Length: 460
Image 1: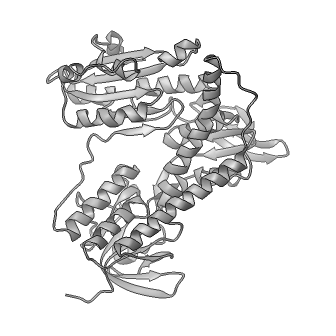
Image 2: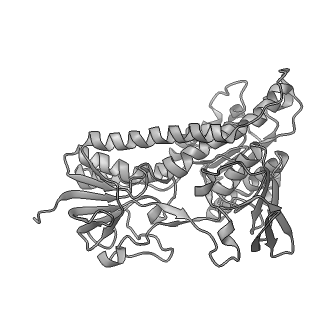
Image 3: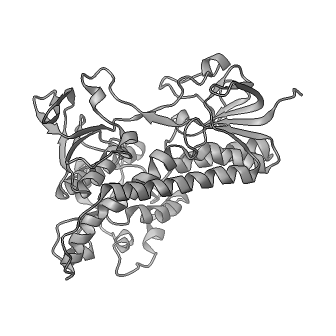
């Protein structure tokens, strides 16, 4: 057996890489991790966590409105962006420090450096003049925002990375995109009092989600003050004394203080030396792996967004854990990517698990649809207009619940529990046998007994 410096070298200290490194190190393996930025990766540093803090901050404006509806007299409130940013940065630093400490406690060595593969077993710390060897290598570098680089004026736009560090809150913004990040940031900026336009080239936001969910969210976002513009895209961006002028391909012109592109992310593979080590990329530019997260090079593996399988932090963590169990704990483990629950922290938020109605009809031919749209109890009290959507999809052949979709307050919390039942193959009869918790919005999930007739027309 060859003599290597490390049993495992992990490139990237995000959620998936750190989990794999810790478990491997705790097994007694000699483990090193390299991270060129801050430890914690996209989720902790420039993704899920700081974004959720921003969601919390922005939701307060709607909570103040609700409070007034319940009889509270509240003086005119104001929001200080710098105070929030400072507090957010302190918390992110604390969380990053925990990641660093946990690696150390597990016995892993951390290199604050960019790592580049020189061959299948050799890694160079590019800015340290240091080269080490490893028996196994794990690529866990995640992804990064993409922008249309050939768009005239794109240099004036920002991405989600910069949105976390704006020196001041803009008075107006155009958020470009229709996915998770775009709808979440549109809700954040609107909730903080920014005049917000969400611009998406497609016919509706959140491509890949259930059509009822997409339509419902777009309508509810507009209730909260977001202007949703669909079916067009930028032709150019021009910086003027009056702001950024967005010229669209349908002739529209939008002027705003900021333009933020959230049009997708790409695997972060550039400059890692993958081609030198012989690692194959797929047609999407992601590291190609099998069910064991192994690349075409026997000793090199990859987990998380860099593989472009299911780009969610909890999935990266499970993939990293499965890798460590298999390679260092004599416990062959793969991760099942089927039926993964997810949440969109839009305003209102979304929780979903399983098939969309379109997917269910493609798979089963027919599907039983149960659907409810209603004003939550809290909203009815102050005569608000906001509505909640709940939708169940059932395979008529075996009566198994194959999809659950919720849009409204606490939807992400609800879907975590619903996902357990769906993953276990619950039937509609078993679902309905669960006694409702009253009074809650969630009770609607177990009290929908009548099939939704309009579902035959494809839903709303």
